[in-house]
Image (tube, rainbow, N blue to C red; front, side, top):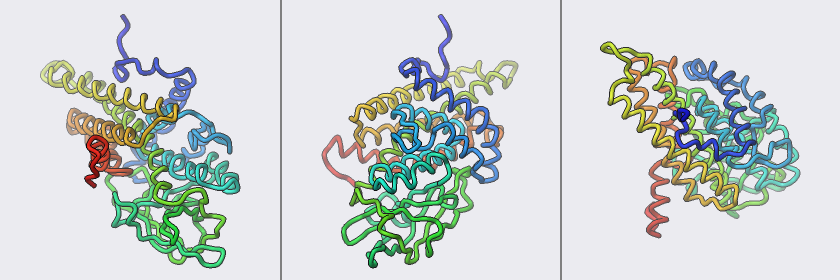
Length: 387
């Protein structure tokens, strides 16, 4: 009998279609050949590798599930595999694609007019226009309904005032999907970077997602034409619908982080000699590695089934919460343990574990904290809202 794949013990790959396997292999090659040689230095220098954007666009990774408008029209499982492989490189890389695809292109596609779709989506798919998503505010966090950003009618235009915080892609974005209270409820607007009164300020000093641009957005009487308002949605269901799409991808991404860490730890413990034998010959090491493989396998099956439900039109937000909670916690625990197994070597960016570990400290918080997702499942089980 052939040896099992140590990062796919249940042969989950055999459950993928030929097209899904081809997509995974294509993105994996891109990550191995183009992204990984850059990511250690990008993290160390706190710079996003902008040169990878055109290549990601050429591979059809931006807005990959959208039909038409220059997009690839892939299924949900394929998008999940894209997220998994990109995060195997770095969560900052996956975050860029996730924001561009699920938080910016998706709302234009789902809530926008045909004119807005034609104007923005082809250039976004080609990587010529970069987007960011403005929902979170400094005081709000897990309570987006409490946002203070306001949009008021002024003739045929809108005037927007307020601010957003912790915005991925903010300072490299050409447009921002901004959600604001109006007299008729929460609405979404497409703001353009050169609009007067619109400013992005990059957040420095981060110890997580360093190879990712994070910004604050500020709006001082920004005049936005009615043509830039997303017309097909009103209320919090608009931004929450976007977040469900993005969270789905996040259930897959941390599997890539965990696989990267386990792969590194297996190789390291085979080469590292202590007391006359490989580190991998110790029972304690084997037990820890085996536990990592068990948890990765569980996460792989969870996300694959979630993807099949999504493609069948039967995915519920609560199921996304369960998978996000489980898979990010799984990956963070594995990254921390792999960092420990690598000893002193584990604290440098020459190895992947510390980079993934620090990145996952953000992933477990953004787009719904672990506690929020636990309470979503608690509400589903009991029928009682404990928020």
